[in-house]
Image (cartoon, rainbow, N blue to C red; front, side, top):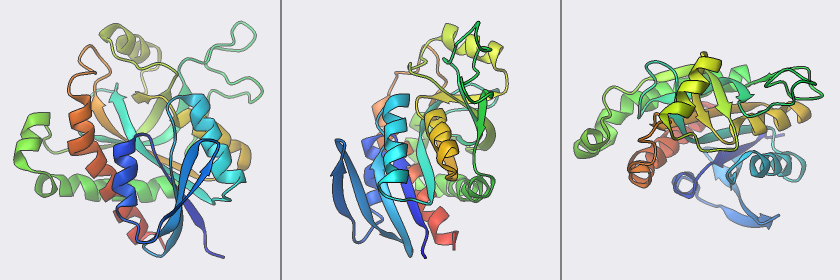
Length: 252
């Protein structure tokens, strides 16, 4: 039986870049979400917008697994950079996930998810290895694939691919004070966003492999809001399409 792959995007622009790759998609609407079913490079795929925040993400993940019977989930989106050397235009492949706003203390340790006895959830190793390779190829493509004026406008020079801890929380981290606090508390963290850890927890519950890549759109600081729509349109959406295309071409 052919494996069913879910491709999840965080924002509309990224979803459209993936749908543009599919020759035969058709839409089903469930729980207010549009799920696009079709094929991509011989793979049966379901493409969906995750919604913003952990609750919306968890609902989407559960529907993909229980209703659409997907066998693996690939998530692509944007994030704010935290780690040293993680700059705008880089990509982060998650190896672990943590909810930075989870705090059931003093009953549980800060960041521990009640009932699980853990603070972190792991990404799927094989899927993440494959995703890393696709991201490496995308990083090499960027200089010739994106117009020079766009590269210059966003300061994109030799984008790098990082691997490690991804933070999630139900707030948009966009001040120096917030990002510095997260870095001090969780120095291993590479980037921060709003959905990945929720997907990881649901995938852990169902035993479904998850791989996540985030393009760094800002440094989660006082400048995080500057030109975000332009970056999303000109850079992040193109990254997503190329990464997914290269990943599924090679995954057999």
